[in-house]
Amino acid sequence: MDRVALLDAIARQPASGEELALRFGVSRAAVWKAIEALRAEGLGIDGRRGYRLVDPRGFGRITLSWRCGRPVRYFQEVDSTNRVAREAAICGESPIVVADRQTAGRGRQGRRWESPAGMNLLFSIVMRPHLAPQLAPRAVLGLAAVMAEVLGVWLKWPNDLVDLDGRKLGGVLAEMESAGEWVRHIVLGVGINVNQERFPEHLPEATSLRRLRGQEIDRAELLGRLVRAIDAVDVEDPALLDRWRARSRTIGRRVRVNTLGGPVEGVATGVRDDGALLVSGRPVLAGDVELV
Ligand code: BTN
Image 1 (cartoon, rainbow, N blue to C red):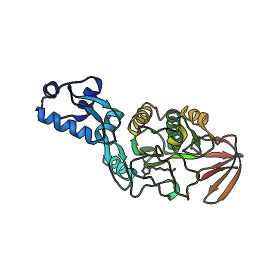
Image 2 (cartoon, protein in one colour):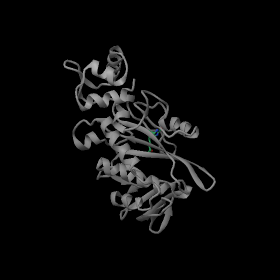
Image 3 (tube, rainbow, N blue to C red):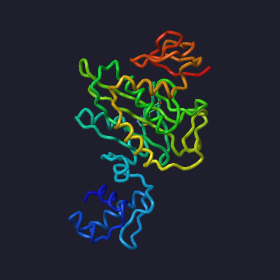
Image 4 (cartoon, helix red, strand yellow):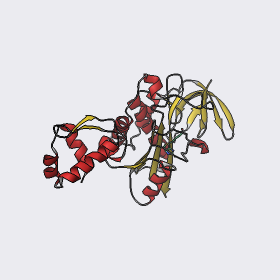
């Protein structure tokens, strides 16, 4: 039976096993089994006078698909959601891939992305914009801006989600494939520190939403809001860059960008359509920004 539709039904109003069996055209035993599967994801379901969702906090395929409004491919553990999403994209699929834990999470500039199980958000979305490859960075900056708006946080060039003091609470790893003049797909990989409170010593600048807000956050509910906001974006819209600028903690600041060719220092004056940061007029295409 469609467990996402079942969850939706009991979230709206209580319903007896018999009623649900009739509505979904299955046996009462099948309803009971599906209810147990929902409970196994951590959802609180009262079964005394009909089934009723009393605590919507859960994390698993059914809960996440319900929250996101479209099917989610969920892994308790996987090497990298970007790897899974890319393979699906090559096969013509456009899934959202979510993991509770990654064994080989990838970060920008060849780094690893570490995140303990059960606390944070790790997901990848496949997008197929009708864009020239050189405009893909603009789309990704815009998507990071949309996420920063949802989270109420800021951005450090290019796509780091940061608090007002520049402490990092999330990042984006976008991997693009193109065919000739057009983007074939973009895998938007997102890692957000949600409920993590302690960080390893080698990451003194890391923080989380929980630290910012001082309370635990429902990860599935947050993912649902992020995915719905991302799905609503026209990634081809040039005005997306204005949303990035409005959330930026980089523009107008004195920065040092550590690039492969050495550090570039100056005032960050803007971003170009190809995503380059203008540092005292010089375009920088890739690197890590330090505010100085
Ligand atoms: C960064 O270095 O700032 C970007 C980090 C992006 C990490 C996310 S976690 C989900 C997705 N899968 C990966 O392997 N990486 C991205």
